[in-house]
Amino acid sequence: MEYIVSARKYRPATFDTVEGQGNITVTLKNAIKNKQLAHAYLFCGPRGVGKTTCARIFAKTINCSNLSDDTEPCNECESCKSFNENRSYNIHELDAASNNSVDDIRLLIDKVRIPPQIGNYSVYIIDEVHMLSQAAFNAFLKTLEEPPHHAIFILATTEKHKILPTILSRCQTFDFNRITVEVASEYLKFVASRENVTAEEEALNVIAQKADGAMRDALSIFDQIVAFCGKNITYQQVIDNLNVLDYDYYFRLTEAFLKEDTVSTLIIYNDILNNGFDGSHFINGLSNHFRDLLVCRDPQTVSLLEVGASIRQRYVEQAKTCDVDFLYDALKITTECDLNYKLAKNKRLHVEFALISLSRIFVEKKKYLN
Image (cartoon, rainbow, N blue to C red; front, side, top):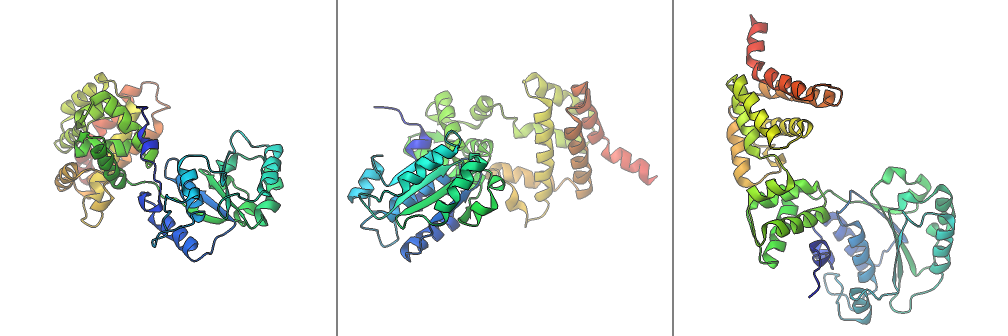
């Protein structure tokens, strides 16, 4: 049996299965239900959050001849079957990155005039539309404003600021959200159960964090980890494979800072370098650690922490030992170190000096008070 990557195998086929974009799917379903379809839509947002997927589901749903009560396609009519088997003539996808000239748009405009053979609408999805040339945008304006009644355009982009205002004014704009770590982790848990893979919760959280808000990236990383670990995924295997610095290093370093233990601080950093981690990556992670401790100081902001339950508890406990002034000074030191890292000739010494400064926060404060 042919292997299919998880990002394709578990790609949503209905609005209800789209993760993390509830506000958009509800709006689109209501528009279909109330027959208030616009002639042009603009889907904006980061990579891998479901822009093209929602466009395909939308195209499939508006052409379904037997919609369910909750406005989902039936998957049984001829239109739905042709969509599911990738043989539908009602959906046309154009990659603007490689088809960005005036001639490409003229070919598209000629194609728009042809009505659909099955269903009511022809849907034209133009991916990475910001890559179109100025002349191509201008050639597209009139058709986008007044297309034939059977044509619907869905423009998708990761860079909304590059779209001409004249294009924006002709479209209904939907801004897609980044996928949160919690949502991505829950979906990875679902995929793992379907694939008969056992995975530690913290391991899935690290994968979700590494994906940086993109569900497609999370699923691709998941496949990579399964190839490395097999059917049993552990936290340690994930951080080893993805070259992620263990949370434990940051907790130990913070304890050393609070004890003004410069020796332990330098030894821990040496161990981090020996494990092959870059100084810039480390100092950025340390800044994030102090930020996470700061949000844990107040119960109302603990929800801003994007980690698993067990690590969350550890953050809450360590935050109790750190006062706000210490965390503020620590963030100031690490941020300055991060900003000047590229300019430093001796990068190891640059980071070590920041670590020594962190260990001396209380000493320097006492000097100032005296």
